[in-house]
Image (cartoon, rainbow, N blue to C red; front, side, top):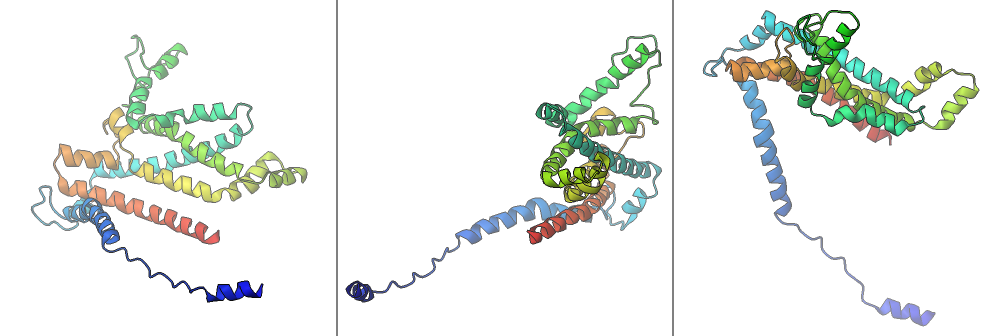
Length: 306
């Protein structure tokens, strides 16, 4: 034993190998990434902000005139009101319906089939969904064959066909219904996964204490998945603020249905008004940034708590 220890002591000591230097390769890759971000993100951002202070032809500095026009022109004010209507109704409808369906579907026998059926609209593009629902809302004068499903049902029940996409009383709600139909499945899947993460022992203990299902829903389920509800809600808000496809395909922004993204497109490509178009883009960016900051901050808090 002593001899073995002495032999080990006699072995030469291994010196620490010097840290390998990577040279310029990592800096080259980082530099390419920074250059890519600068060209395709930073430069367009600041250039758009600069254009928002110029006139329609981008030849004369006009200061805040484009922004004042947005908040004083009746048609542009209607655009902002429509976006606000979308923001409130579509967000509340998708999150609330997604949460309710997530709770109810967890109790049915064919849970996976039901979830798949509700999630199917997410597989469609906004353009495809707009085309499908345009046929649903299709209108023909009274006395003619109704091609649209909704008007066909109305006439079959003895009612009169309605111009769903042209009548300002209905059209914005009809468009919002398409968005809700598409995105409720997304909210349902995310919230259902959060609900399944609640320990079953907590729910069973509440039932043993005599709590009803409604009490369990509001006192246990909703508080425990509130971080997920917040993330889903902010995701919906960001999507709704930049809604474009459904409105453009179904009405083209006509009949009082225009929204910020569609009006931005029209100002830029139809009217060649680069100043107002850039101002609309900047306002849209300013509306999205606080929500993105809220999401990032929440993620950091959750990571710090783990």
